[in-house]
Length: 254
Image (cartoon, rainbow, N blue to C red; front, side):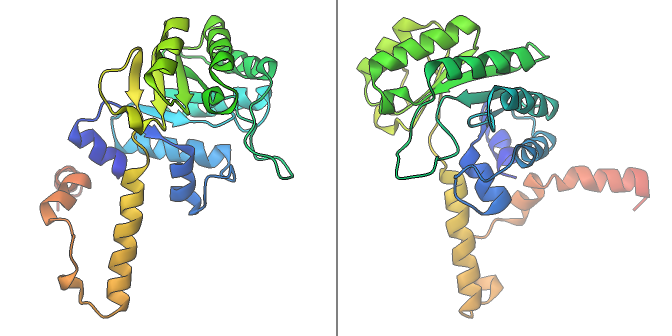
C-alpha cells in the first residue's frame, strides 16, 4: 500500500529496507531474522501493487558468497530494479562485540558473486559499505574503488558525516552514489549522489497512527469520532477501487 501511495505521489524510486521488511512481515526489529524467501516475497508483492522501481536492501546477501548468488537470483526473479549487498558482518556474532566489517577480500567475493549471478543486465547491483563510520575514510575509499573495479553499478554509503568525506568518495569513483543516515547534509544537490534516503518515517508514522486508533477504540472512543481517518475518495484511490468496479462489470456483469 505504501509503495502504491509513493507511486501516486510521484516518487521516482522506492526502497524496501531490511528493517522495514522485518517490521512488515514479522513485526520484529532489524536483527536479520527475516529470511531471504520472506524478503523476496515481500518485494514481489510490492512490484505487483505499484509500478515504482524498487531498490531492495539485501543486507549481507543472507550468508556467504554462494548465498549472495541465491539472493540475487531470487530478487531478480521477484522483479526488483536494484539491490544492495553490504560488507557488514551479519548476522551479529556471539559475544560483546560491536558492528564489524568483513575483510575486504570477502566483501570483494560477495560483489563478484552478485554480478556473476545477475542474468538481466538492467538489474542494478549496488555495493554498500559502512566503512566511513566503522573504519574511516581511507578504508572507505579503498573499498569503494575495489567494488567499482569489479563492475558494481553504484555505491551505497552509510555513516557519512560531512561534505569533505563525500567529496573524497565522489573523487575516488565515478559511480552513482546512494547515501543514508546523513540527514545533517540535507537534500540539496550533493556531488555524485543520485538517491538520498530519508529514513523510515512512513512506516513509523503508520505504527503510531495504528496504535493511537486502537488505543482510542479500546478506551471507548466511537469509530466515527476517531481523528485522522482517510477520506473515502483516498481509500478508493489507493485500493484501485475504480479498476475493480470496471472489472466486475466487464467480467462478472455486476
